[in-house]
Length: 178
Image (cartoon, rainbow, N blue to C red; front, side):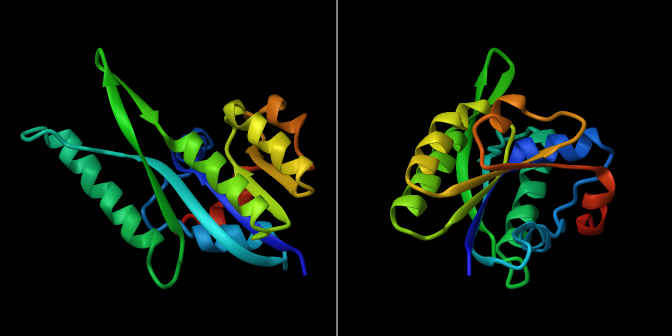
C-alpha cells in the first residue's frame, strides 16, 4: 500500500479558499481533506505549516487574530483532526507583514520524510514556487510528489516539476468547510 504524507501551506491555502468564496473556519476538516486526497492510500503524516501571529499589548486586532489562530491550532491538534502544526513566524517590515520560516519547514519535513522512507508520495498543498528545489530532490530520491492547487490560480511552475497535479474547484472543497 502506498504511503502518503500531506504538507499544507496554511496561509497559502487560507488565501486560496478565500479567493473562491469559502469561509475558512477554525473547524475546517483538514483530516477529511487529507484522506480524500490520499484516495485510499495510507496517510502517514499530515502537517499544517503557518506563521504564528504575535500580538503587541493593546492591539485589539492582533489579539483577535491570535485568538482565532489558537482556536485553529486546537482544532488541528484535536483527536478528530490529528494534524501536526509546524510554526514559522511573522515579521513586520515597514507596516507590511511577511511569513518567515514556513517554506523551509515544509522543505525540511519533505526531505526528511523522503530520506527516512516515511512516505512514497508527498501531497503538497501550496502554490509557492520556492518549493521547486525540494520537489526535484524528493523526486530524485524516487518519491512521487502531487501538487494540489486551485483551478482559479494554478501554479504552472509547480505543475512542471511534480509527478501529478490536481486543481481543486469550490464544490470539491465545500464539504470540508464545516
